[in-house]
Length: 467
Image (cartoon, rainbow, N blue to C red; front, side, top):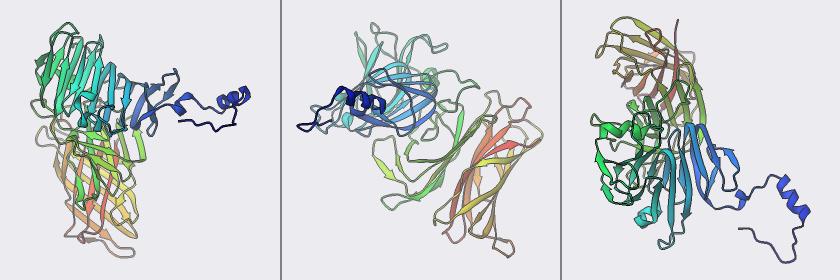
């Protein structure tokens, strides 16, 4: 709020000066949230018509419209709610008030185009009636929830126009002018227009529609596609003192980087999900292989069951890749890959690790028999570390994971020795074009701990196939 003291007068000259200083009326607008993730082509439009390129850390104001093209964004609202705006989508934050008084608080989103996901914040938790999502063909109320919604208007390929929604946890109510329908976890619903009754539909008919806002193309920016794989390495200590030290298996990621989820054979989204909020320390991408990587600083992880946040005391490394949809494991042959990009390794002790090199060797023998051998070399202090894993089976989608097979440590001025009690894990996948019959790239996340249990190192790398 702008307060003017008695006796202070703003002249026309002063007002002109304000304009030339670049102060817009958004300076005094109500802040309703913060962009915690933005990737690709994402723009915003303020109520006064001013447009801006949406970036991580930007404030979002009441009445703002967020538009994604080949990109996506995530916003943390002031009441700790989270919204994911998928690619080729458009939403407006038409109403938001949060004071802790449930008789006054309110959240209203207008879904004007495309798809989004919402994780309810405090407003909806205190009084569910205070949250609503409105589309041209139906509205959604909540019952304490995490849900996905898609509005199709001649932009959903072979899918019929209308509104589609699915529930991850909690529940929603889809309303039209003639009827309403309660939707529970694992259920999906559709309504054609305001004059139609909502009805349930099969997961296999709508799962991919809700998780991607358009058919992916090779020219699209990384983010939002259902054919991405994600390997996430995280270590640290939670605020409750629990150890957070693990490497996830590689999984299909409908929302990469800070939100990942499994899809079961039935097409339902499982509960193994995580939202991560932290400062992006490193970030890079290789357009020739479709691999992207980065590091989030110590921050907060949130599970989608609404239980709140858990502090993570160390860095989170991530890497994602995109593999051609027509990929099939060759029955014979081999390929080797060399790391061309990587994240700076993180060490639990706070020491310094420097990445040296990494290689992948792939032996193709068809589905169920193709394997990967990985080797990662780095220095920790003055010691050289060489970690490896072999015989990792490649899944039909090109992903793989396995345990540490060996760690050799070479002290400065000394000889290499095998650290018998070392442990760790590797996870990754193949990526890029298969025009030559073999994927052009690959990605890897690794976690290595020596036998002392003190030094634990994590990092990621992006690879290019050798000629």
